Length: 282
Image (cartoon, rainbow, N blue to C red; front, top):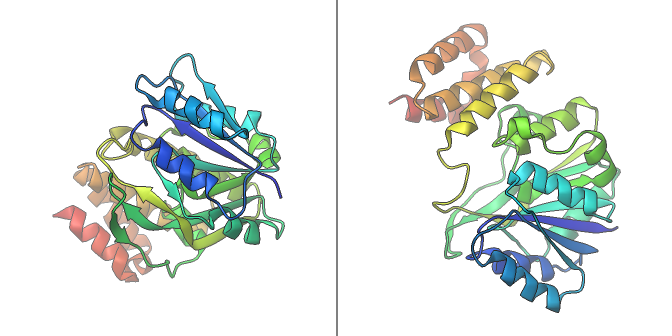
């Protein structure tokens, strides 16, 4: 099975070498590694050129202007030659068996694989927290908005392109929206509850506290609420309500929660959901 790895990098001089090292240390080697330098202004590009001299299957493309991550990832997929394309953010890390474990499931006629991260590390690479595998199934996690880390995402290239790739209109939630689209298109998605990679949490991470995150969540909600099965609509409403509370839209968030509670109180039989609401209400 041929894997192409696509990494998008913007001003990532501090972390890019660690990310590359994690890819080239895999027990199952990728066919190629494509890095899209999204017009970095730091030393990212010179660092990539140095690595290119060492690894002949590393391809480096530099955007003339910053295109942001959706267009850059899509460009990487168009250039890819592998049957499957796996993404890695330039500040995250794969453990050495990431591709091997992905291969074990993707060979069973799936068009996409998603895995939740095992650990979260800080800017120095030290473990901040470990997460236990969720008890919920893929569909529950999907419609609750808990699916989406690109560094745990792998797609069949031809299906990714046929369905349109990452969509700029959902920037900040594009990594979640694409799995909604795959699901509603009837594509088979393999889910790995605890996969072999680490998310790096640091002050420059683009989704942290970004108001565009809420705007994109609202856009996904409006576009998909009528499309998804009725049984999962309460989960999508719950997710939006939590995000409204998170971004201090407490009035609207409370109204949505009250409506949801009166219509589907069973949603709140889950203790984790109740805690998620309470910690953001007060």
